[in-house]
Image (cartoon, rainbow, N blue to C red; front, side):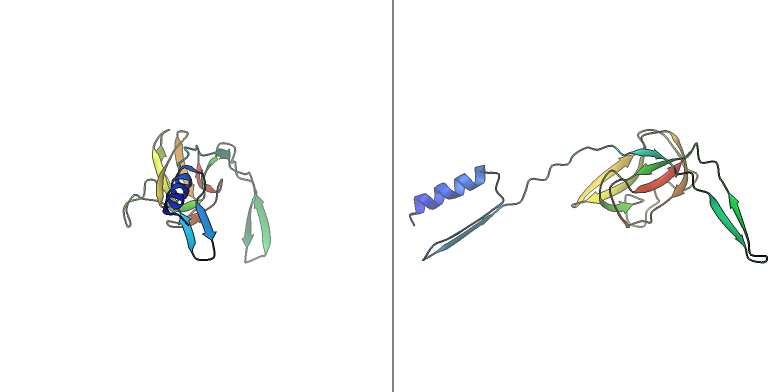
Length: 151
């Protein structure tokens, strides 16, 4: 194959949306590969009302079952805006951004989610107080998975 044809093929590959190209002929083989351009998409988290499930308490002494319905009408969940690894602080072993009882305001960084080697700060979309942290540091989280309960 002529070197000019190979150069033209490489230039066309650079301009194309392809990420991989393999070409085999009788006497040679060409494998071209490039990394995909990673585009970070800004996404907002979803704040959902906490589910109002009854709490069941079992008294072991008499085996009575007591069902209590807690008032969850003012509680909301902050969910993960993406799939990734949850980090409670900006540095390993550092103080967490928020803990139970922390007062948060809209725009406060409440955690970091690492996705594809990119650290994405998750900001509070509403004012409130952290009632419960639902995930552990360095835990994998899914899209829309509840991270915090706030009131």
